[in-house]
Length: 271
View 1 (cartoon, rainbow, N blue to C red):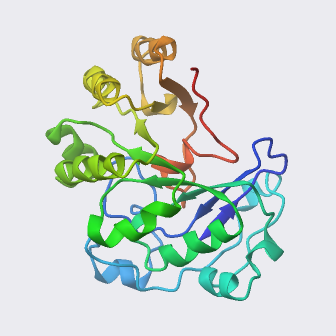
View 2 (view 1 turned 90 degrees about the vertical axis):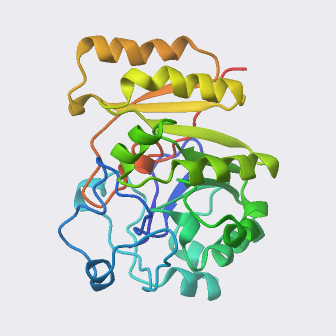
């Protein structure tokens, strides 16, 4: 599935484009990999970051619950085909910025074609990723990215494994360093979970040491106590950290991205 989400009144003039549902991780709070309706490709393979999406990604209609919020409904068509025919923005409003999300967009087969097309239209690309990809294969895409939101639920290996289902923390941190070495603007994206809240100071110390902005999201419906919420909210007073209360994602939405990058979302940091 690939869907452009756009708010009717978009004060930030920014769209969110989800180009794939396939992901290298199996996060405990994610709806995409746990959903009942799976494609044949998903049913027959346990995807890892070494594998690629071989299906034709298609646009589908937006959920009826969201129709009142979006300017247009998505249409069924191949994304790359729309781009090739120069028809993408015949269907969707051309905006100054786009959040590019997934799944894991870094492993999307036609990513470079999408990025180059958006840049031809002078669009600022905000790229949301877990960093779980082969850097040599991903490197040709880096030049197109204006801002990178890097998913890092924990910097402790055991917690990262518990949340994501895979022992990929070393790879994530290695690719984070690769992005920083390339001079890219990176913002750490951390949806806090009940199992990671107690060690959140380690993550804030990590981002402070690397001088990286941090966005923290939490969902009250996950069972946080009043004390836990107060503990998270105190980060609002910390320079370089933004805190967002989030909503439970819909069935086909990746909670990691859409609850932090909803319609027109763009974090604002104080100088």
